Each structure stands twice: as C-alpha cells, then as structure tokens.
Image (cartoon, rainbow, N blue to C red; front, side, top):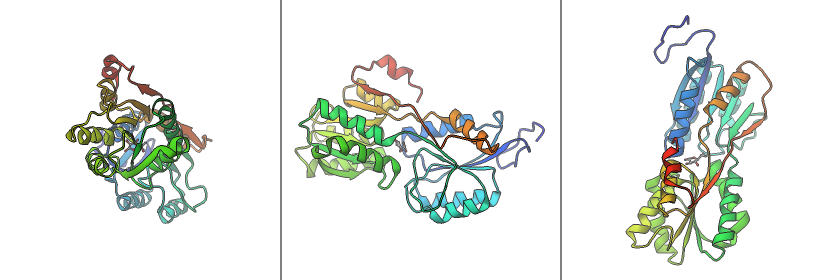
Length: 299
Ligand code: GYE
C-alpha cells in the first residue's frame, strides 16, 4: 500500500477493503447510473480496492465472477442478481468460504440459509402499486398492455405483482422487453398487432417505454394520447418524455445509492451490525414536471 497509485488488479494496501462487485449488465439508463454511483463511491480514496465485473445480463457470467471472487478471497462480495433463482450452489460455495455477501438492487430466491448479510435496493412491489394507483385514478377504463422486464428478475416479478394487485383486471396482454429499448420496441410492435384495442402501456422501465414510443409513432399513433405510457425509473430520457407529453406518469427508482452501499460494505467488513434491509427512497412524477427539473437531473 503506502499510497502508491496501483493499477487495477493491484492487491492494494492492507488497509483497503477488497470488494468484488458483480453487476448484472448495462441494459438501461438506470443501470449505467447505478454503476457510476457504485464506482464513484467504492474508490481507493474512500478505502476500497474494487474489482468490478459486468455480466452482460447472463447468469453464467455472474456465477463465474462470483467464483473468481471466492478464489481471490476478497473481503466482501457484492452482487446484483440478474434473475432471482439459480444461485443455490454458488451461494453455498461463498458461504463455505466465509466471505460475507451484500445483495444489491435485485433479490434472490434460494434454499441457502442466511445467503446474505444485508440487502440494499428499492421496493419494487410498491413501485408497481404506485403505478397501478395512477391508472386506477386516471385511466380506470384503459386497456392495459404490460411491458415486462427481464422475466424472473426481482424487478419484473415484484413490479408485476404490485401493479396487478391494483389494476390486474385491466391488463389485456403482456410481453417482455428485457429492460432494453430495442426489445421494448419489438415487443410493442407485436402488441400493436395482437391487441389493437390497447390504449395504455405499463412498462417496467423507461428504456422499454422509449422503445414503445418509437413503435407507436411508427404505427402512426400518438404516444401519451392514443396510447398512454406509465413507466418506472425516472432517468433523464424518461423524464424528458414526460415533459414532451409522450409518457404520462413515471414512478421513480433511484439508482444513486453508492454512498449508502459503501457505508454498508465498510460495516460488514468490520463485522459491525447492519440492518437486514435498506430501502432506497423513491418519488414519482406526472406531466407537471418542468424542463428545468429534467435538466437538473443528474442521470
Ligand atoms: O428499473 C431497470 C434495470 O433492477 C431496479 O433494472 C433495477 C431495474 C431498473 O434494467 O431499468
């Protein structure tokens, strides 16, 4: 250590906390902002030696990265699981190694007991409920198409559950756009054919909603009017669509929690008690948002 600059891969000073972070991908504006926040907070100046690996939305890549972290004997493993299931074996291996796990953003379903020390992320089910409440109040007769995120991901499963709890009877069809703009567009092209009566889309993230706008406009319809769009995330492009009246409502999911994550990792590395869950604060926005609000958005 001793303050040398250290190229990446350097084992770092003894005083640094060695963290292996497995990010699930770079599929959305939310993810990009989240990755930036994590990297900005887990710096050497802040006491961390970070190994960051992007799995490109493939579970097998994530499992490989997690095994590498065990082999490297890092101090703490942090990861954001692309889907909920399929982690039993690798989580057991991590547990046997004695390395503590901090779960980030999405959730896991596993038989392993006490698979992680702490989880930080948003309340996806509440996000879905908030979106559903807007529909119930503002478009109670709408025929809703649900544009799902990556199937089997915590964000998809829970947003769907919350939304359908409130307005499930209004949903006439569903398809996944895998949380990306391109696949969102393709899914909505199909939906325009399959469900000509649809007049509202609930999309599980902004990027897919932006793809939906492209598909709707290409079909000669007006997004936000002929087909209303209710979205989740609140990245700048999503809020811009709200100002442009192409989105009708956006439930925020805040990706900027790197500082809170850094604090948790430090406590875990020191063996301090930590809360089992940390829920990140979210807001929500309608078309009364201004261009100045959008311009001030950090991501
Ligand atoms: O909403 C979406 C991203 O897991 C909360 O993943 C995250 C979701 C986010 O692809 O844009």
